[in-house]
Image (cartoon, rainbow, N blue to C red; front, top):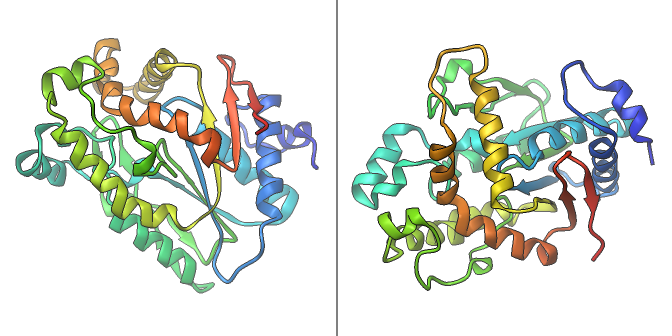
Length: 288
């Protein structure tokens, strides 16, 4: 297997990485390279709570696939498939006010994601597939002319997202609120029930395509809040656009809490590869 030092030397400037994350990326790339070659590119799912390092790890995996295995990957983020503000506002009116906030299953455009996967799978050498982009500070999808295109058909599709691979059956049934947000704004679990139903249908159909599932586990919810706060600062760096403070981030993460805890409980049995990440972005593969 290629050495992590070889990957670190080949990385483009500005991509954050350490020996541990490079070693994890090389191990994942090795597993992907051993998958049977099919007519369509295999879909690789990578999940982890906010701030778990999955976006950076996916970029490292892409570099390792290209450098060491001669494979051409396409990178997709589930975050880029969030519904824009108008459809979420409509859901807030028709379903539940909490639907206005992006995050839980039901607030992604799964039709657009499925269409993108289909287009990438059948693309000819001269065809280009538009890849959506979502601006988290604006909390809305960017305009179509700002979307990048992927040329031709990829050898591998890497899909990263916090709930990628999570199944409705992984989520414990409602027995009452588990945090302040739910206690005040969803005390009867109506919003949760709607989101769980969404997870069981359109999302499940996409997860069924996954050939290899990778999961990153972090220590606790406070780690998620701290990491999301750092991400918010990085997104707003050098600009004057508003960002969330700790109170706002804590409330935001509470939208995800029930599903995040379900993810942590399910992935030791569900994921093909499971990593535990420490506070210094060290990745330890968990043998099962």
